[in-house]
Image 1 (cartoon, rainbow, N blue to C red):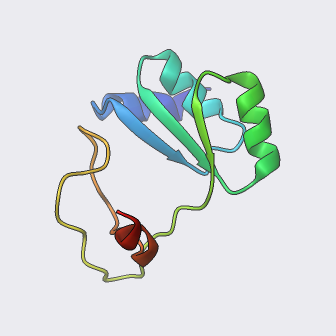
Image 2 (spheres, rainbow, N blue to C red; image 1 turned 30 degrees about the horizontal axis):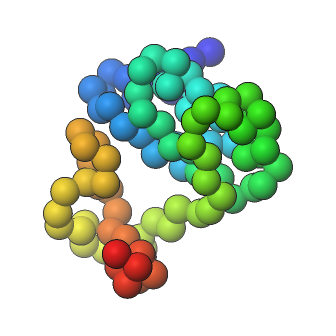
Image 3 (cartoon, rainbow, N blue to C red; image 1 turned 135 degrees about the vertical axis):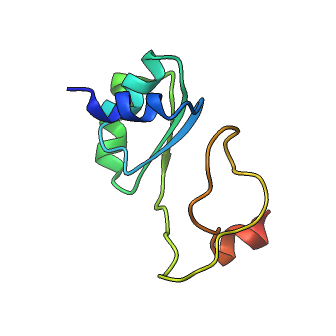
Length: 97
């Protein structure tokens, strides 16, 4: 039932961005295991359900944009210590930061 959480936990990371978290099943389990988790989803109804289950966790309405094929990875530290950056930020996030 918690295969995704077991997989992520085995990576040895301490902070996780759960993109497309839905109703929060995986994020909630990761938090229960002691990881620092932020859940992101584009569906307000799904986030509402996640917040109802675990109001103590951080939930954000939004989309995660992946780069097009062949885009170079961004240099610099990953946004979550111990994690890995697998895609560069969008132009909007570059100008915001």
